Length: 379
Ligand SMILES: Cc1cc2nc3c(=O)[nH]c(=O)nc-3n(C[C@H](O)[C@H](O)[C@H](O)COP(=O)(O)OP(=O)(O)OC[C@H]3O[C@@H](n4cnc5c(N)ncnc54)[C@H](O)[C@@H]3O)c2cc1C
Image (cartoon, rainbow, N blue to C red; front, side, top):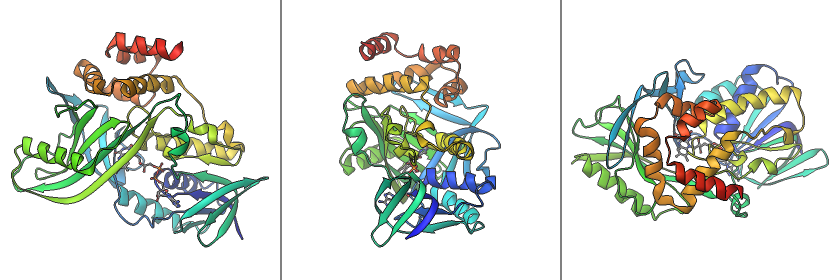
């Protein structure tokens, strides 16, 4: 049986970003590291967007940046000035290629394309079983998301950000390539929180996603009809679908980190690294992977890695509301974005605001609704 210091079960965003941090730190040259994934990571399976100031760590693979973004509902449109941030786009495949190019320079890091069937901790070792082999390690980083643990409890709501996206090419020049649509709630809500998200890369090309923040998935045709209706509303008469993508991202304050042990750490969405109130994960992963690599150099017990903060509770309140009254999402986000300072809202979503700044954002939201939810949660 082959033994490693560290094994990563799953080699997607969180694992690759952590291994990248380890590699470039130069502090793990004496550690044997194995990445296990059922997928060879050679296809463009997702598009990531995130806001960040200029000069980010991954700027060389950013394929498009925007300084402005549109927020809309049935009553108003607002162009948000994102300064000092930019909204950046990275193609999944560019990120995988970027990290694997770095890994190829490090003979102590290995990638094996196998499906993980199980892992188990015994004494001070963790054993990982695939269809054809068993490996052992001292520390395991797991990013294989299993929704069962979150769904097996009722105390904390479990919603999802779910969507289907079409990358289309139009005949007419229809898009403003400098203006993505961050959220457009002007589509029929049908009792849910539903919006369109549009990422234009040229006047004739854009990714359009029909997105919900809700508990249950829809039949595939409902997302696709939603995209078609929106394309029609934009006045597009002729277009070609270049690519399709779909996503199902957990939105929950469930304490994934409670499942960590001394030697097994859940990372990425499986570790609660997804921002519960939005589904955004990349930015948190940048921060958490850096913190984790720092942690590994000084500490040994993975149960000590997670730190809860006030934002966990803020997210929980919003999710409580969306869980009980999913149809209110549009008005809550509209109240925040109608007159709120975009830079402050994004700083709040990045969990970097002071208590005073938190109040400035939160007080834009329907107060009665949040106070009632707060009281219900507390008592
Ligand atoms: C289409 C899509 C678009 C998204 N867009 C954004 C965005 O714009 N911004 C943002 O911040 N977040 C976005 N997200 C959310 C989040 O950033 C991604 O889901 C991100 O990939 C999560 O990272 P992760 O490491 O937790 O999981 P993943 O990147 O999914 O990695 C998990 C890995 O585990 C592997 N795996 C699963 N089961 C097994 C098994 N049994 N054996 C071996 N390997 C296994 C998978 O193949 C995968 O490579 C998006 C998600 C999706 C699906």
